[in-house]
Image (cartoon, rainbow, N blue to C red; front, side):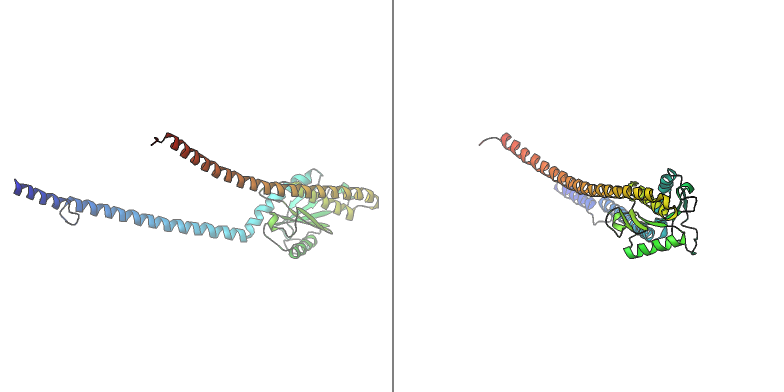
Length: 278
């Protein structure tokens, strides 16, 4: 019986020896290792593919940011908004960003022709230049002057897609017959754009209308000044509200953390009460 038990023990060890090529355990371990190797190889290839895809997406996004496609998308948004605003005055809007102008270039994206009864029967227009990238003040004003000349316009407006791209603080700034505004493409609040188009109409009418319109022009100038002050106040309030919202969000996160700490402390108190006394 002892010899039989020893032979049985030797046989069992032989079967369970992972280094014995004839044992089932060796075949099982070898198969598992092979499967793990296949899985790791597949995971590695998947990780490489994900990295390649991410690099391609990042490169495409960067190219879009640098290309004219981004600007064209914003330009179409501005054309639609200006068309709605201009229609209320009977003006005609034309998206001409892809069409050559009087000086042969394409500068000047949107042209608005005023209704004839507002210009004494004479032709009068203003132009908008859409910007979805950061520009300096000098470069922006220079481009507006070229846009006005190219589109034969009496006033020119630079429309920036974001406040951090605009070279001026605030949503609306005037430089003689040139203006710079922010029409945030992520918000699309038309207040600044509406004010800018009203201002441009006033400039065009001042250039084209006769002397009998001087009193009306002065009244419009006063009203526009009031609207600019109101727009500035709205912008300031929105900035303050955004800052307050960020602080509230931060405070909410801290409250959640403190609430978790409080719950943990109360759990410890409950546990201490339930613990048997010694």
